[in-house]
Length: 250
Image (tube, rainbow, N blue to C red; front, side, top):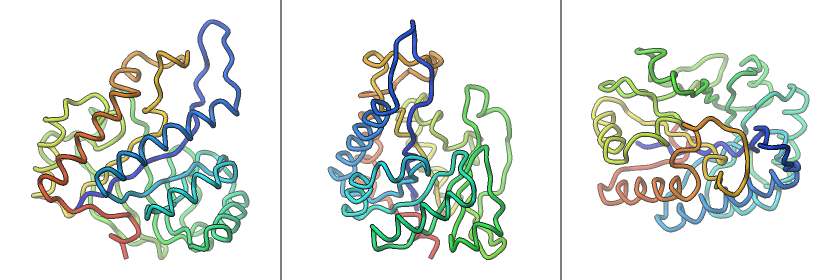
């Protein structure tokens, strides 16, 4: 099973040469990038899970309704929000969507699992930092879903052969043919492959003067759209099964 997920987050990078990009402009970039992702998913009739960053959830109500209306899962990505803020946003989002938010993803700032269970989350999908050295940081990890504190803990996937993780950076820089072979071989060994990408990777950095490392600007923007399109085309051609996170876990 392929679990395709997207982190919807604003770009927080500084800009070059004293230029200014307001918070409102950053939000528009995030919306445009997410719409590009949705168009590609619609083209291939594939459903995914969208992890919306807590601090921008209430500014993206129309977009979130559009994502949910297309049959995709809405979950949360907690960048640095407090437990109280997560609880408040979760309640409001469930009210305007009329659906329960089951999943949450965290990276640097992690709320204890027992507290997440009290907020009635059902699963946690934590991720690590993905920089240029990350693929060489760890060579072994558990890739099975486990139960802790009444929550399903979904680990990041890693190729048992190349030992590369399925994070946003690896997708961006690997040749698509190699990435496809990695997915195919992993599915022979593991029950699922969890793939995650960030909405900011679909930004045209020739248009917006953000200060980002050179290796992070490679294959971004339209090239990321093309890579995602190539991956989904291959998934359908090979008739590989895909699922939203909440459906696979429950």
